Image 1 (spheres, rainbow, N blue to C red):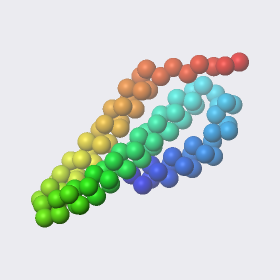
Image 2: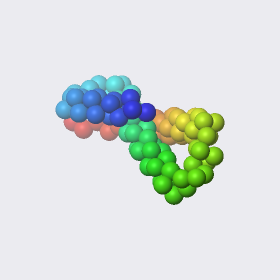
Image 3: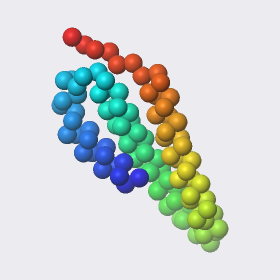
Image 4: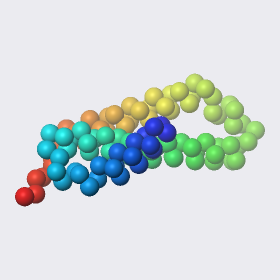
Length: 99
């Protein structure tokens, strides 16, 4: 998920000034990649803060609440949510060409 933070910064900042000259067939993958990395970055921050909250609020029960198996399921669920949203977004995406 740290890779998503890196992608958000590098790809978006470097290519933002060139988006207006992209051909339309490149706009769809570009925006899908940007939305995917931003959503992944937001979910990453959410899970990190939830982890800190659980550690502070329930210090004695933390290791029973946050097991390796639950962490793996949360990661799988996060990626499924991200890809499901991106497929939904790509299906209904409409890019208007301004001339």
